[in-house]
Structures are given as structure tokens and as C-alpha cells.
Length: 463
Image (cartoon, rainbow, N blue to C red; front, side, top):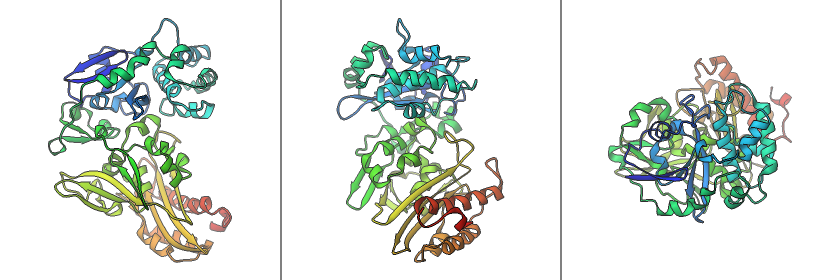
């Protein structure tokens, strides 16, 4: 038997950890407030909160899309559904949605209410922009966004300045049972985890549960997100090491990672949406081997190394990890244990760019990253990567080699663009034609230099 807390109840279950949390909530526990929408993590109608104890003994809550989250990832945690927020009176979040007409048809409303309640539980300094960002994974098909934004402004005004659980209970944001959750979580039984030698390996499930949810429902799953690998992000002298199950949210919240990448918030906010960043793992993004995987492109430009564990531990450059479409340089029993990269030194700059049909929660048409070191106006080091322009995530070796040791001039950059055009082999698909993707990458290539060296170049210099 495994245990979790569902709203105010401790639940014991021997159900397969591979079924989705959504199906467990709706069909096993009969809590129908959590809605079935896309079953792909796109619409947010199924949003719940997952609370887990941190090292200080406090519960940290994250919003997740339960339709693509394995039940096993909720074992030992506190699951909060819209039903668990029910009290005799509406909460300030719910009341604001009512007052400002933010409910429209009402189908998406539970997801918005849960995500905004999660924001109330986790924000350090409430404001309009961060509150709106907290619902970047929730879609309103009635297009009632302006009324929802007005609701958000009303909610922000009411969040206690010190938003401890006790203060949120006092002000009616959450039920009183939340105050007992830390002690209840400490008393839950240990959670079983499978061995990867005979199990299907699952990280956050954000891709696998879109592709093969029925297969996973009855499978033996090895839930690597549950593995206690800490610290997830570790600085060892000149090297940064990230555990395989590190999420994009953990990168965003890491002080060390933000010191390395001052523009990190801008870059990683382009990666999917808040619930998906809360769930998806670094290793999952890498082994998924999508030609447009955002984190893959990010770490390719860092010239990162993949650490594999299996019968024998080994490491290889990430650029050598992709042999062909969805084909990896690893044995069947190997697991990604960590990713390492050299911390950029003085005079070294990094940038990530992405173009997609909408800003949040979308797959890239083309994405690209660049790390460059310039000293005395000469390019000492450069690593370029791009996605959407071939069958694998691409390290642009020829272009990088051609630019290395060259003067940082407009002529050098334009010459590099010509080599870039010869190096890539995009195909036409639903994300754009071959011609369009070539144009996009050319523009993103120029965008790297315009963003990193605004005093050197203008757009007219490069076109």
C-alpha cells in the first residue's frame, strides 16, 4: 500500500502508480471538480496542487496538470483539488472570479482557481505580472481573459503581505486543515519505487503520458522524479552539475543558477508553462530526443556532458548523445544520472531564443542558443545550437568552428550565416516550411549577437 493525502484525507492505495492522477481523482475518489480537457497538459482544466515537505519542514505547493502526471509521483505528498478548497463561503480567489465575470462557461474555472490558490501559497511578493504568469498553463476557451485579469488584480490586493499558511487560513484563502498537513506528511508510510532494470522509466511524464498513457497505466514504472537526489543543482569549483530529475522550476528558483545566467528567467519562461516546468525533468527532456527540445538546445550550447549510469558509469558530450531521430548513444539499461557543464568565465555571454505560434505552452518552430567568449574583440570560444532544423537537436559544429578565433565584426557574423545555411537540413512540417525555418534560424542567429552586443551592432549592420 502507498499513501498520499488527498485534500483533508489520508488515502491508502494499491493501484498501479502508472495510472494518471486525474483518473485516480475522478474515477477512484469520485471528485469530479477536476475536469478532463485535452489530456495533453495543454488546457489546465485538470490542474491540482502537489505539496511536499521541504528541508525546513514546510510544505511547498506546485501546480501540476493531473492528466499527464503519474499517480506514483503523488505518493507521500499532499494533493489539493478544487473540491479540497470548498468552505461555507467562497474563497477570495473564487469570489474575485465571480465578481469580475471570470468564470464564463465555467469549465476552465476550477483550473484557474487552483492555480491562483497555488500562487497565493507560494508567491513571495504578489504583483500583477507574476500572478498572471501563474496561470500561463490555463486556457479559457471562452476567451474571457480580460475578466480573469481583473479577477487576478483583485486577488493580488487581498493576499496577506506575509502569506504563511496560518495567515491564508485566517483570511479564508484555504481551509483550516492545511495547518495540519506538515505533520501528516511526516507520518506517511515510505513510498516504494521500482528498479529501472525491469521498469518503464518515467520522469515528470509530460511527454510519455501524451504519447502512451494507456500503456503506462498498467506498466511497472520507475519514477525517477521520486528519487531523492539532492542537491539537485551543485557547484563544484568550475563545474555545475544538475541531477537528472531537476526541473525547469528548480533551475528558475536556484540562486546559483541565476548567478550563472542573469537572463535565466527570460529564457526559461519560454519553456512550456508553469505546471509543465514544475513537472518535467531535465533528463526527460534530453532522452525524449525531440529535435526542438528547449532544455536540450539550452544545454547543447553550454557544451554540456551527460553522465550515464548502468552496468558501468560513463560520460559523453551531449552533442554526441543523438545518433539519429529518437536514437540515443546509450545502452538499454543506462539512465541519465546527471548533466554537467563548465561555468562560463569572464567575457563569456549566453543567450537562448525561441519562436513558436504563441509565447507560452507551445512547441518551438525553431529555437537556438549561443555561448560566446569575446576578448579584445576576438571570438575566443563559441558554441551554437539549434532545434527544428534537422532530425536531431543540433550542435552547429561547422558554424561554431568557422567563427572561432575570428574578429567580432559584422562581416564575420554574416559569413557565419552563410555557413549556417549550408549546415542545416530542415524539412517542411506543421511547424513551418523549410524556407520559413531557414529564415527563422538566420534571424535567431543574428538575434544572439544583437542581444549580447548591442553596442557593437544594429540590425541594419547584419542584414
